[in-house]
Image (cartoon, rainbow, N blue to C red; front, side, top):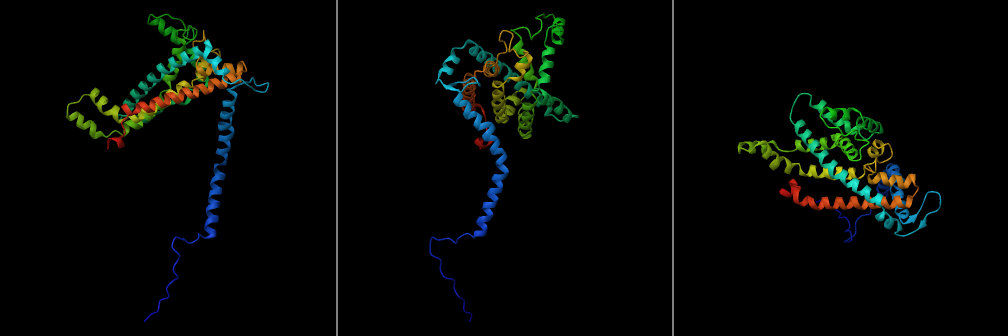
Length: 318
């Protein structure tokens, strides 16, 4: 017979203490993690969070960069809403967003539908269409665009061949904004790639079943493609709308830093730059910046609210 010595019973509710070496190891791991994150944390605090908090304070002050800020409450916002040029900048920006964003997404989706089909040289075509998105935001492209749409330039000469004589778009207040729209639409590569990824996820069985039922190409696109890529479409609409509200470089360069002629390209950020850095009204410019933040947040909220009616997620369908 073998005698077995039973271990003493442990009091109920108490757990064995973790070894001190294990606790020290976890602390070292956490410390290493925070050490690796410290450059990002420092950059976020110094370059993002700090300036945002400072600008929120300056929005309620009179500040010209050379004298200490003076608290004025809501005066900057009251003056801003009554400023005719501010109202003009809002009008120009809304017009740009409403025209440029749908055209850019339509072109991106159309090209993505073409590139989704298997063909020779597909990779080369994708790279060629995506290239403008990489270089479109550069200052050099803005100068090239201004040269293309100037008086007696290539676009003007092409119009004359077609019997249209409106002069250069850059100097015409009725057309210069559409030159900016054309530059934005030309940079359709980024949303195109996102659309292409969404199209690759649509099951081929759905198209085959629709063809058996006699559905044409247009009906297949409307009843299968659009609902299946609606999450991707929502993402592109949201992203491109936010980018359109923030347009600055193209308007500033194409208009030769004047945001004109006759304030025709006075987009919101261009007027903000003029007030803040040309007229040294940092308090007013900060108020404009936070108004833009609130406006973009409201547009984003409306888009997220509306997605319930037209965005179809696979998980929800299940």
